Length: 203
Image (cartoon, rainbow, N blue to C red; front, side, top):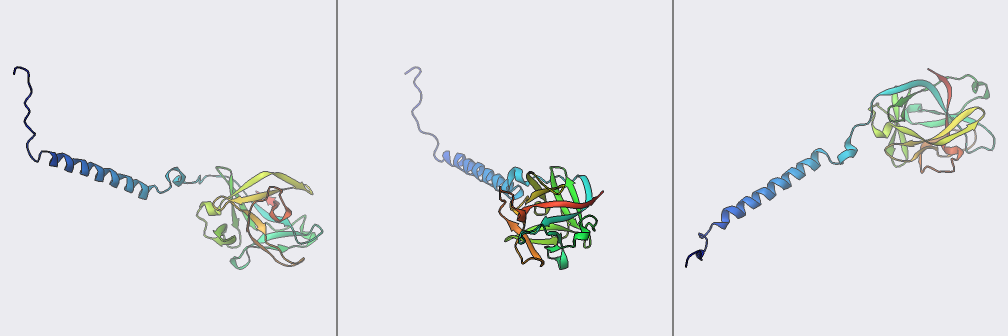
């Protein structure tokens, strides 16, 4: 009849090329996604940290000994590559020897470089600290938390590791002895064991 469409079926096997093409498209798309995840495993988090130094100064990293009832001051040193706090004499409080470079980086984080070894203070996991070759990574970056706690004219701050999230802390010792340095959960109460001041600053 006029206008009537033919009712014959499609040529046998014509659907095979279409199916093969669809499978090929799916495989190519999956391969592209896999390649992207391999190259950029963390998406935006893979963006490099700022490497520009805004300012630097030589300082002593000083705290009040949390294990004492008085105001015994202790300083962070990198003795034999293992960071720890050690007491210093009262005569040195006014004039001592800065042992660290405190580099303020763009992005408002600090890098602490131990002058005798020219190595950076870094977090290694499991609440441990080490001195290692400076590579400007997140494990070598420290950011100040909260506002300063002012004692005897010095500003004390908590310093949280950018990669680990925990704070530079005293790990406890008997009065007058070396005190371990490590990482602990940042306490919003700002305890003495987590407060650090820049002492004997010089540009």
